[in-house]
Structure formats: structure tokens, C-alpha cells
Image (cartoon, rainbow, N blue to C red; front, side, top):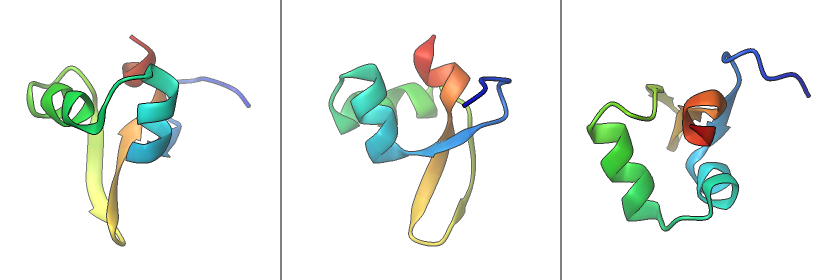
Length: 53
């Protein structure tokens, strides 16, 4: 798996990767620290590179 900044992961994957609770992921997406894309289907997606930061 390459990490070129364009890989999108689900919020549950972001929680597991960052080892933080969902409200923390939500707060960082609202503040712009974690990049997201428009929701497709039932769940939004987060940019893997911005979750790792």
C-alpha cells in the first residue's frame, strides 16, 4: 500500500490508525486538520496522510 496522500479511508479505519475515539476524529475534521471528501454512501472518508499527521 503506497501513501501518496490520495488514499481515502473510512472513519473506523482512521480511529484504528490514530488510536483515538471517534469524537477526536470528528473534531479534527471540523477544524480542518484531517482532510475529508464528500460522503459517498453511508460514511464519510478521511485522507490517510492527514490522519497520520
